[in-house]
Image (tube, rainbow, N blue to C red; front, side, top):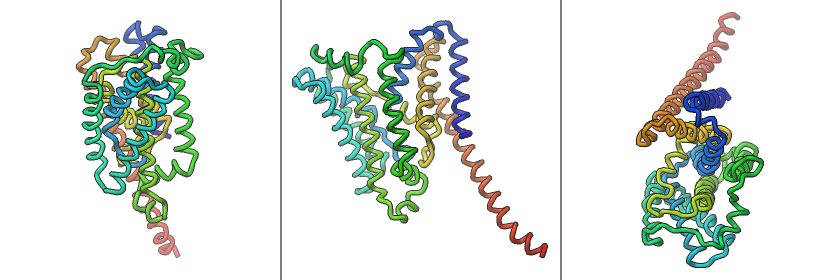
Length: 333
């Protein structure tokens, strides 16, 4: 809880700096644009965060988004698939990607870093190959479905991406914090060996975490294509995995696994998007955007390590006190 309070305080601080620093940051249009980006990036942040909490890692998120968005455009525009069927197929493809990742990690014991790094190259190469390295747009008959699924007008003053993120965040909260399955994932990230000895099917839940992560990437690809109306296979989703991991870490997820909350992931996503908005509003060169995000991520990692050491010291001190009590009692008698 203390970590979450600190994250909220940091969010409020950079938000206040953003508002005070530039008049344009206070406009309604700017707030809607930031909210729209938070809604989009929050989707992949949720998937990456849940995977990190379980002790996993996925470096292929951005390339998976590029491939899924490219294939969705091809299915709808060139193959004439009905948009609902194409969207369902793309989400199923995302789940399949996660299933493959999970099986390679759990059954063949290949390191997650290697598996997903290979996925990063494979999915990007496939996206460029199937599209002949050309940008892909949407067919006109997709517009009516786009209107209902991702209408340009907001609902209750909120962009559609925020509506979708809210639905996913509620589902993720119920799953991770209020179900036995979510507690299993946290326990696996905290101490996989102990959980395995307790008789829990560890591999099954680790695979589930990878499926959730890649499914969120596929959902993001659908929302991204409906917002942008086209996709460039060579760079769609580039660096997205780094943003997703950074959002999770800034939101309190430990890269060691076992720690993190859905609320924290959402706050971490908001921090990144507001930092990007601050860079734009303050006319900081766009080339420094990654440096600003890197500094913020480094500060988050330092904070996480500091808090971990403090907790370890408190536990050690408590253990020493417990050992002293019997000795003191014996001396007194």
